Length: 104
View (cartoon, rainbow, N blue to C red):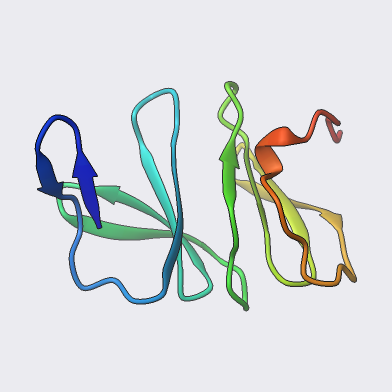
């Protein structure tokens, strides 16, 4: 995993099947890889949550909520708790950051 600002920097090495990266307003870096949501810090990847299947794109709202989808499920992480907002999906595509609906 590399960062290019202004020079190329290795943020974490040895990750396989990395798919999506998102940066929170706080600067915290999130990554989806091998069916897990991870945070990256000081060259280490720390698991946040397992999904049981590959996680696609990650979106982070300004309030810190994290949204992601697997091949069949859409999830929002709110205050560390997972809220399943949709099941039975057929391979959702696109960026969850475009969503405007809020779930309670």
